[in-house]
Length: 142
Figure: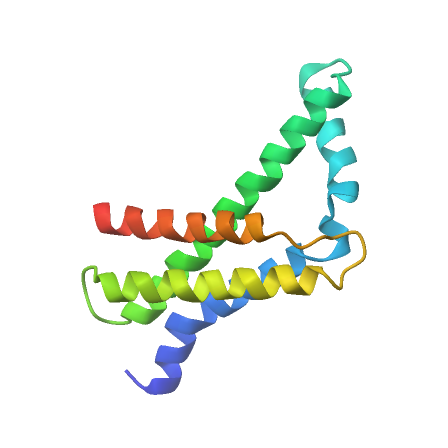
């Protein structure tokens, strides 16, 4: 397969997903903006007003689950790109995917320090790296 085709097939998906993650780091997706959406959805689902503390807890958990999931997807796409046309699982490919995802998570949190309504968090980088690692465990188990 030609190098350009390999680039598109294997590396375009993780690059596009990284762009999506960058978009999720905008002020549009700040907790101030997503909180009312979560509150409206919970009220629509359960049909009554839920205590603000419960809504805040659910909102927090949804946001943190989002970190795990978005970086698990990124690491899975990175693993696929690094592996290329080869078959199987290799710890070096997995480690490289985790390292790239962790580095991207750190730069994303740095980016958030410049975005109004967003705050950077080292804990989020750790959570993102955990999501990336979980994806590699799933690849290994498979």
